[in-house]
Amino acid sequence: MAITTLDPQTALIVIDLQNGILASPKAHPLEGVLGNAIALTDAFRDHGLPVVLVTVAGGAPGRTDQAGGAAPRQFPEGWADLIPELDGHPGDHLVTKRTWGAFHETGLNDHLQQLGVTQVVIVGVATSAGVESTARSAHEHGFNVTLPVDAMTDSSLEAHVNSVTRIFPRLAETGTTAELLDLLGK
Image (cartoon, rainbow, N blue to C red; front, side, top):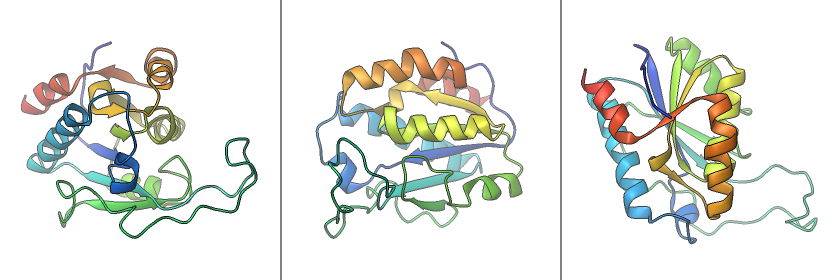
């Protein structure tokens, strides 16, 4: 578990750091997770590297056990708004998704390909849903994937641990925000 390399064209993908998602309880204190995600966002911007901010504004239409076949959920005003620390940077690329992963029907792959991106760093909430789904897709699209596990959390500690220990090592290099900031500084 160590982050060894950052390609010259690496992009940061920030998953669902928005009002509605962050309002529910999480497995890790949000202060640390958000602090790490924001530090990476600021560092990527400072180095002129692409930043992609992803929000979720809906869900896939299929039936699930959890939803009980219910109609699509309606979200209150402001639910999908980014947290203020991330919002309003003109160089960022904004993606609104309607499924767990940021690549499905959003044009994200095309955007990253046009920029010549070969590696993505993914942070955010929830580890086992938006982050994992996006990491799986990025890996399938041929990107080198990097996951700083201290810049993500989940509503379930068990789900977070499963993703970090069983899934992520098969898709990516994992490590810490400090390791990434050190590599960016070199």
